[in-house]
Length: 336
Image (cartoon, rainbow, N blue to C red; front, side, top):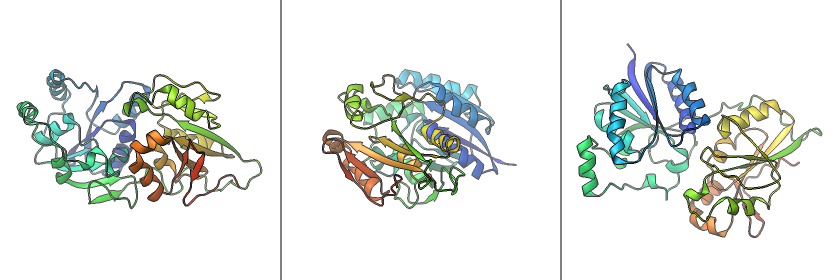
């Protein structure tokens, strides 16, 4: 009999990684819990795709109020996800909802996987071992929550990572590539083809999560310095800056969209620009794709560790929009 496992996700990217974990562990039967940060078509697309590989599944839009936690526990029971599992898989180790489930499955084998670059940037919250203050810990204990972020890191038997040879929050890790070695199934390098042309994408993200000053007008003033053909919005963006570009609407996350775009446009090379989106690191190995991080002095100061990691460990170019200076390392020039 197959062992029963639960895999838990917070973002569409995590669901994409979860698909690969389930395929890799075909000797296990999986249940699925998705705790969506926002309810939209991208989330639903990946949830419905992933649930086909699972026995029981539950999709919940996250609510942060403490009084909603009781309702969350009830939904787990009503949907058959309150059983004892042999294996538990999760990415967002800071989630109280997930920490609760691990606390209730103390005898389960715990496995973790990447939550974007939170696992690899040393200054990120995942490298901290903070716990709630005593009063909040007492309240959470009342709900049955005993394990926090540090505990989950210590309990993890194995960590699945999409970043090869990069230090992670979990020392024992296994590389799990998002794309096969032949990535977009087009091994012909078209860079020297006279029919090849280049299109550019700006990959959006909710920068106001960092600071209210990084609103759409901030983005608009900065990306106007670039020649952008397509604007690909983040699932949580609701307002888009004005510009001479085409807005892309798709149920796919950017990683899947780019692969599909490359297949459908075999004579096109792609340049991608973004401030700090981790998706650039996820697609940089694809044929005919060049990625570039952009910044000004304000955002560089806040995320210097990330830009340095992208530059030193991944060899990603970054462009200072104030000075127009391009910092390049291990550059593959698709313009040749």
